[in-house]
Image (cartoon, rainbow, N blue to C red; front, side):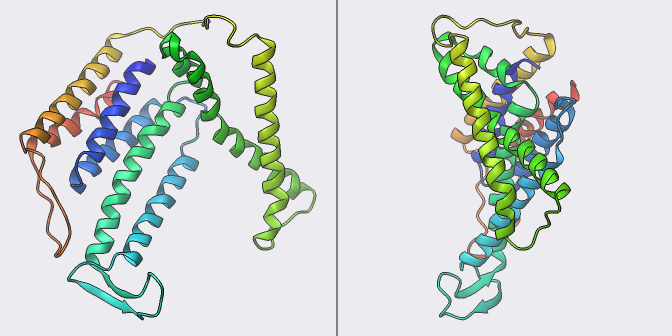
Length: 272
């Protein structure tokens, strides 16, 4: 998949998931992001760690909003007032609004990680204009930091377990975390030295192979830009319904115009 077409699609997902607080559209954009990631991911990529991390972030978002938001009429129970920040009524509306925030957050995160799990980091760097080549190189190196940290963590944990290490509380994990971080930092230093040895920044960046535009890429980029334009127009003409669960919970409204824009985001998964 062409990186520029993927970037246009990611921009569309971000706009549509953040442009309205209606949970219906956020469910659609999240579904599109998950479908495209599952259909377009590289063969060597495992989705489980990323999806687990997104799920944990979503659960924490719902939990925190439920505990910290005391607005709404449908009270589940009330915590003592002497509890700092937590004291007060805990409402269904607060939990539902937290779920809505979690859906938007998950859609943005899943769409963002497609940039590193669908195409190679060097493809993203090569797709940038020449004036942004250095910025792109730094971005590409940063995108590989988290996967390298994950691989280092797994390798160090397995090595420590072979030496008889067993988890015994949070403090015992320092025997795994510290070597993992140091190994990742060492890898970053080696990467910087390799770039310096190859005279990085001394001239125009070259590429072994350039990303070509196929018909499917043109269709994905065109429909993504069309979805962005159509959704912005819908916002200006008032066709995107607003939704708030406060003060009392109401079902979200649905409009065919923004819903169609969200459904367009499934096209990359259908063309895989």
